[in-house]
Amino acid sequence: MVGRFALVIAILTAALQSYAARAQTEPCMACRVMRPISDCDDAAMAHPPSGAVSVVGTVVEANGASACGTEIGLDLIRSSQAALSQRITVDIGPCLLWRQGDTIRVMVDATPSPDGRYKLRACK
Image (cartoon, rainbow, N blue to C red; front, side, top):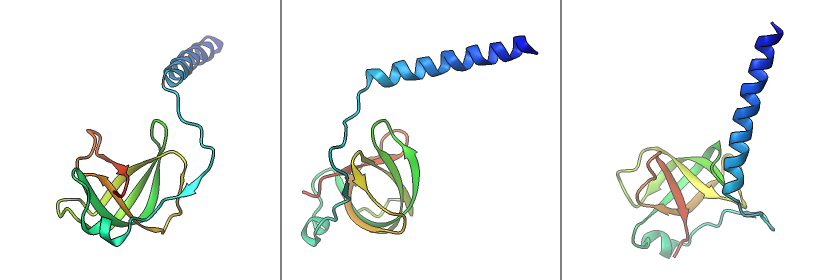
């Protein structure tokens, strides 16, 4: 029994050390100030930049942390690209505040990452 416990502890220790080593090679930005997600204005929403999609959606969930930021789930109200699904995951990066139930007007990359997440972009 004690031998199994020691083995489990050794495996967990090795796994955590490997995770910690990987995390240290990818430094994240420290936030000096947290700020709310900025809504894009009507002109930007009507004419998204090349490679971007304008979306209006309701924040419905936090899917946990991405590498150095946060992922939120959005139920779309409308978007400039008809092919988007009803719910998308957006990597909003670090230092942004939001609340579940907020309706936000933002730009995201037109093409999601291989894992299906859309990356938040500047409005213009």
